[in-house]
Image 1 (cartoon, rainbow, N blue to C red):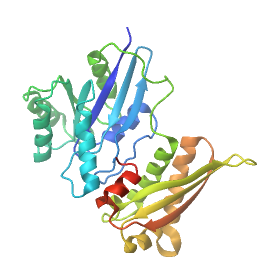
Image 2: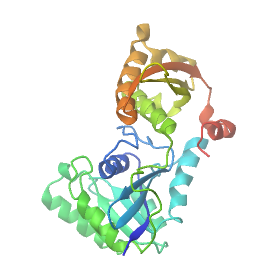
Image 3: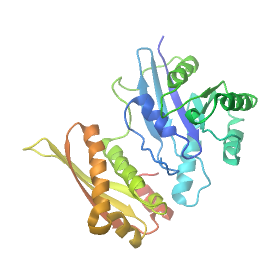
Image 4: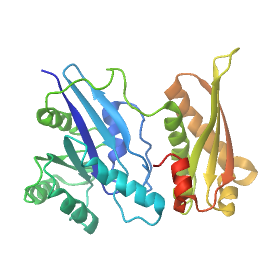
Length: 294
């Protein structure tokens, strides 16, 4: 008997959804940052073994949107609830249910789709406190299973997969067994570059950044792939900050991104980066669509 299905992972920003998926898939598909709202698109990742295929949807964190892009991100998260066989709500080591978690849980109560709750970052919590958190969420009576995990350390990830497999219906293999994502290489590369900007830049800049891949071509005479990309920002003042004194910051972003891109492509990469200003693009419907968020 072959079982398969679609699983969405939802939750507040920065609870570890992308870290969990990268751990399960074994490849960096979703970018990771300590800044909230890192994931902007609904990213499909595929886990396959001999008798199961699980198609995960890594969604943007549910939050109160401040612009058109934020509205799209929240809509993308909520829309997945209607499309899947199983919903996973991930929370972190917060000692109590906060307002945003309470809002998300209220949205789930009227949905008949099976639900699992993951309490992430348990490596930061004492065992006694973990037991209290599990009991608190089990009393809500809407989750088939409440599991404590550490996405970073891999704790109880196998138990999570076993639970999913027990719930999924019989179904076909939707994707080839060697396929781990439906996203094209260009998208993943642009996200890897954006991840490095989140790491290198100050708090006020990252959410106004988009990375576009202008061209990507393998050289005929050498095993080198030339990647040309543009980092778009919303303010002229940010452009200088991204480039940095004597171009040092941009060089750091490029060097760090190139290492990950070479791992992804399995080839030497020549990465060339430019920076351009696109004022207030997150509030412009046409730009959001142009940048691939609709």
